[in-house]
Image (tube, rainbow, N blue to C red):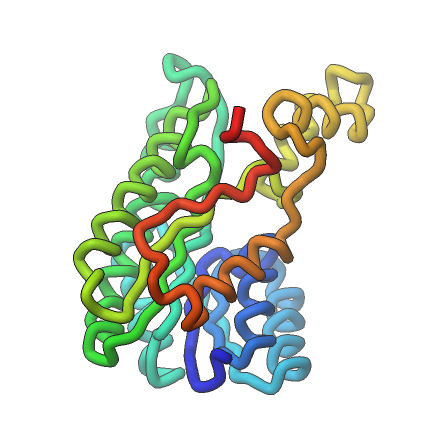
Amino acid sequence: MLKGRSAVVTGSTSGIGLAIARALAKDGANVMLNGFGDAAEIEAARKGIEDEFGVRALYRHADLSDGQAAHDLVTAAEAELGSVDILVNNAGIQHTAPIQDFPAEKWDAIIAVNLSSCFHTMRAAIPGMQKRNWGRIINTASVHGLVASKDKAAYVAAKHGLVGMTKVVALENAQSHITCNAICPGWTRTPLIQAQIDARAETFGGDEDAGIRDLLSEKQPSQRFVMPENLAAMCVFLCSEAADGITGVSLPMDGGWTAQ
């Protein structure tokens, strides 16, 4: 379905982003990976995508807290892959603390990576999409783009902002075949929430399973993690022709979290 298309997926060297990149590649898209991690592991993931799916897979390191680097990630993908037809803004960082104790530098970093980088990548990608009259933008906004939790002022502010920006971009391109949507995952087992699992496990004498149960029981009625592969499948659907009329929406994949 996506043969001949090219995608940029930020934060795609592990977790949700890598699952999304692999799913897009499986459907025929060339992909530009981005993120941090061990160089050998990143190269193995990149080469694995090429070998398994027969597409081009590239990697570019870009510090997304730097707006110019975020912009250049997209322009580099356009130069090397010929176009950026699909943009998935998935990269994110987290820090938790009550607002009076929240370090200002953590606020700045979270807003830069989780919100401002999405502005810069979309600003870079949309002109080419408009020229071709086709594009798919998917922003990983998190359930925290729809509801709040304590101790997450920066993350919630960034994700709420991303939901709003998603709507604006959708409206600005509504008369074209360019869509812009947000997916809003609940608890997903990724490195981003491992620190929260570890903190809860400490209250149960280091029992990680107990920490996981405690985490899920607080918010997620399904009592199980959302799987990265499920989120990836949703992204592939949003890139399909069947989803051409879906734009400006925020799709919870949260095990019932926001139904409460």
